Length: 170
Image 1 (tube, rainbow, N blue to C red):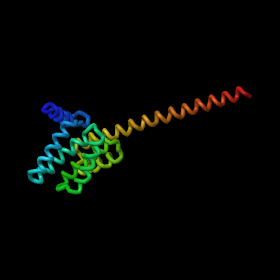
Image 2 (cartoon, one colour):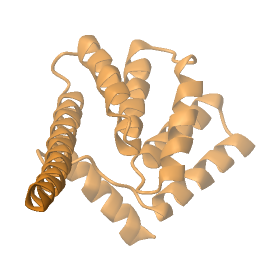
Image 3 (cartoon, helix red, strand yellow):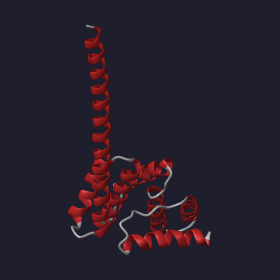
């Protein structure tokens, strides 16, 4: 478990030190965050519970599992109305943007990250996420153009073959 937590912090650390990657989180860290939430819910101040829920939300939207990401998005959307400060709201919007990015909803993710940048124009995490979103949209667009070009090329070859076959018959 300690090794997994170490990997978690290394992942977060590489994110802040200039690596252009959005960190991943594994199931062991999520399970640890869920235990913290349960303990904070059973006994502890409300602020501690909210703090633990934010850590769990962070872990969920950074998961490789689609179900975890969707759960994190749902938790953040429900918690967004309960933001005590603009900083908390910005953090939740950012995490929602990460979740939407991970789930493939790039247009929503871009809208959310743009809101974060409006709140703080020089926020490095948001700027890195925006670049990742734009890179993904560009990459998907190029792949889409390639597929369309291939399809049109195949249709052209088939049509040319049919025309050639018909001209030979005459």
